[in-house]
Image 1 (spheres, helix red, strand yellow):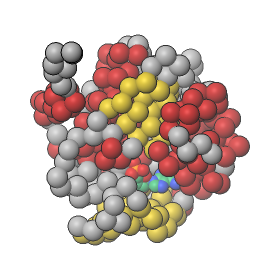
Image 2 (tube, helix red, strand yellow):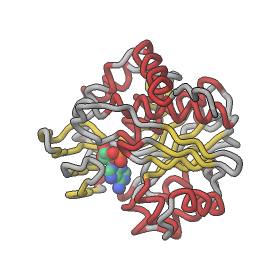
Image 3 (cartoon, rainbow, N blue to C red):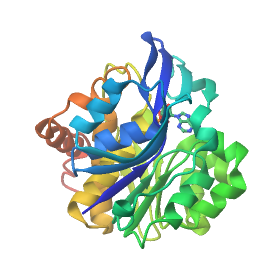
Length: 307
Ligand code: AMP
């Protein structure tokens, strides 16, 4: 099975109550492809960077069998840059700046060798670009999409058009409320189903995730971590683990979607243990499987004898 990931590659500056890192590797496509790469390789990547994007990062991505034929390098341009600051409640973050730079004029061109990709993951980028990508892919089996408040505020009409071509929308709880003007998450999920996607995954940070389809509601726990250093990329790592598992198993049944939510949650729980991609990029498959099993254990209970 093949997997295509489109999204941002970024240089991030991040402040959390536990420290600050400046000019580190980030971006939605970076996190998604590294997370998904634990399940399928090669991951085909489409994105854009400037001449300031370190060769070390390119080398690291290539060594992980991430196919960079679809990566545009604009030599005289600057890479997308994002700065964020987290509060003590790590579910709350302020965006300090979003410098689109080379993204402002990005025109995603899908190489011929990618056009028959079976699974597509549209990371968080301008919804107009997400649609342009989909127009170039021949009948993908499943399209997973992510977005964020930045685009809901600025490009809602374009986002609503893109949603018609997305099968699974992965979104966080405040964004689900913002998109639908509906405070209740179950009702918000059902409203989003009317907008196009048949599956909605609502991420609730340290409170887990909800999977909503026309016939299923599944509530996944969050992994009870005591030390969370940097939540950046948790949502993207979730998306990568989710689509990686689906692509590996080639199974989009409701039961397998639930497993994919747990793999997504597992990858996200690793991501937040250190800053930037430091933890996510050093995993092995055994620890991912172990954490998947721990997710089952923390929510399993004996129903006892019903009187
Ligand atoms: P997450 O924490 O999963 O929402 O993803 C954080 C990553 O998304 C960071 O590495 C940022 O570089 C990237 N990012 C932040 N804002 C945007 C945006 N408006 N468009 C694309 N990528 C973004």
